[in-house]
Image (tube, rainbow, N blue to C red; front, top):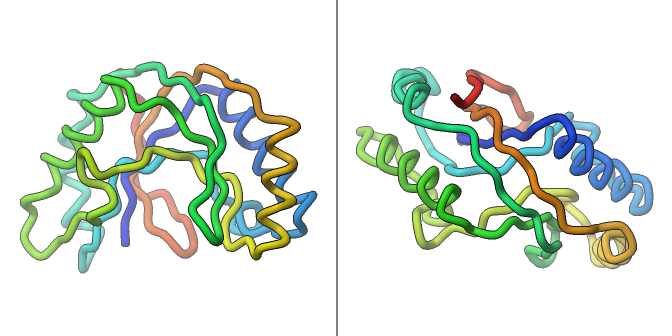
Length: 174
């Protein structure tokens, strides 16, 4: 599996990383920190035999994608294991989703996850993963006390392998 993900300005990264670190601390679940998963918002998840087939298409997006702003407004859960920060799905995010989907959807012998197609996608930044019931409750209480809405600037996009997370290509948005 390969991910196309957005990355943020330094201030937003620090806010998100502080939430990730605090959740790891209060729950004892260090999945995100142990595997060095950076704060990111996944636009697409693609099954492909080789990352090499994805790289040229990814590079072709470099001149098409621009910096933009999003507002993180809430914390949510993908039950039973994941807690995340969620932004408003604004025009900027929707257009990025559509552009990335259009670029990758017709590559032979690849499959875009049904959870990352335009109009069936839940934008989110994972803050805690593989949480059990007790850890999820602790993580939620932690975020209930600490989370406040904030605006983030999307500054980069990357292509990565997963398990463990490994960046293949990253470029700044224009």
